[in-house]
Length: 307
Ligand code: NAP
Image (cartoon, rainbow, N blue to C red):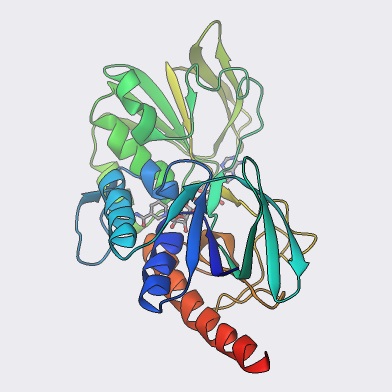
């Protein structure tokens, strides 16, 4: 039985792995896809202390290298269910025997939210993308549309404007949610057009995307914007593994947990974007990883004292 199973290898999971190794816990990291989490979808990470301008890809790689250097084992496995057993938990995984552990740290992060408009599903991968850094290069010298008003959308628009002939950023209000620094940079980029108070009624196309139909929410006016690519950046949903019936979550599906990352189920912790918190950033996810392991270590000591 492991002391700890960490689910997810984004910044929260990798920071937890580094701290777990240093605390000499027996642990494994389970990751269903590529290490890195949402950081991989970020072009330039300019707010992680000490690493100005590092790319999301490079930061993800460094986090993984660091955790492995400390001795972390990262195993490719998709977690399905967990059950309570004597002294801990049994976690079922898709392609292997179950794993037994005294504690669980869920660090599964969040995934892109869908718009839900006609054409979105039909043209997914055929012009509709949720990752500008992954797919932007396909649209060199073409026109694209970015949907959203948060940091991701504004960053994506600036990033895409480097290679695309024109970027239209569509936001449902007349004020961005994104940070002032990013909005200033956006406004200074000549080939970006801002469409405020607008929503996408439809993503249009034949074999691939040809444009979007926008509706002005104040005037009701409809207009078509030609585009070869549509980048959706309207926020994220938590990846709670469908465990919300066993581990209490808020209405949006984030695990209820404070700075100690303890969920309401003793022995189960949640770190990073998947827990309730005010600020979802790489730096706060990494901080969660450290805090979680500090409290897990104390919990394990209490368990040991009871045995
Ligand atoms: P976000 O901050 O939640 O912003 C989502 C944006 O999409 C909002 O502008 C929202 O509009 C809009 N939106 C939501 N649902 C919509 C819908 N159905 N139709 C149209 N528009 C919709 O999400 P995010 O930008 O992905 O960022 C997630 C978190 O990561 C945030 O905490 C963010 O600060 C952080 N992040 C940080 C950085 C950085 O610091 N460099 C980079 C990326 C992300 P309203 O504004 O009207 O609600």
